[in-house]
Amino acid sequence: MNAPDETGTALTAVRGDITEQQVDAIVNAANSSLLGGGGVDGAIHRKGGPEILAACRRLRAGHYGRGLPPGRAVVTTAGRLPARCVVHTVGPVWTPGRAEEAAEVLASCHTQALRAAAELGARTVAFPAISTGIFGYPVDAAAPVAVAAVRAAVHEAAGRGHVFEEVRFVLFSEESYDIYAAEVAR
Ligand code: AR6
Image 1 (cartoon, rainbow, N blue to C red):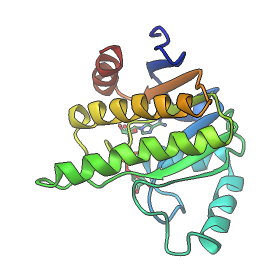
Image 2 (cartoon, rainbow, N blue to C red):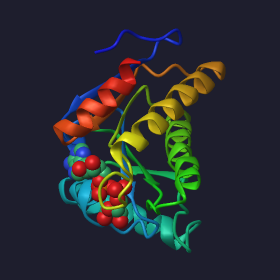
Image 3 (cartoon, helix red, strand yellow):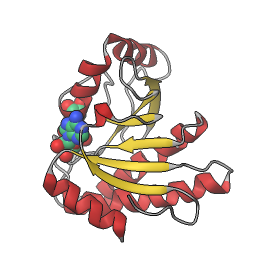
């Protein structure tokens, strides 16, 4: 684990499964429908149970009738998962030649997810490597964007009086872990 930064927040990277994290909030790499999918999204809905999908359906029936736009974040229960809540965000689909646009959306996912978590009073938050699976974002391009956005959001939250204890990146593969861990250690 890395030492806390000057805000008092430890930024960490671990190998593991996002659904098993004992934190206040886990972040879901969702899609705009909010109605489930594969990868992290599939695992969260499968292990968290139907309460999460029911909450997502309520969001779709209310404010998000047209779906959740990429770069935004919404919160639901975590159902049977050990986390207290799930922050759903939609990463960018990687399109060659549009790296700048993708980076803006990916950064926004992290910023908005941490803002939503702070509003709930969450002090420990776990992120997967958003967009680096089915959405095809190269891991070595995603990691610096994700980590920089988290650092900035942690500072922003501290400025408003909310100090995160830990923001953790949870990586499934050894390759992703090595890349995110190096970025976190920088
Ligand atoms: N815990 C941690 N990391 C995981 C887990 C897990 N349980 N499962 C996969 N990963 P992805 P995306 C890693 O595809 O690229 C869904 O269908 C995985 O190896 O879950 O943002 C949604 O509904 C990869 O490194 O998310 C969307 O349609 C990373 O998590 C779409 O996929 C992200 O992979 C979102 O695609």
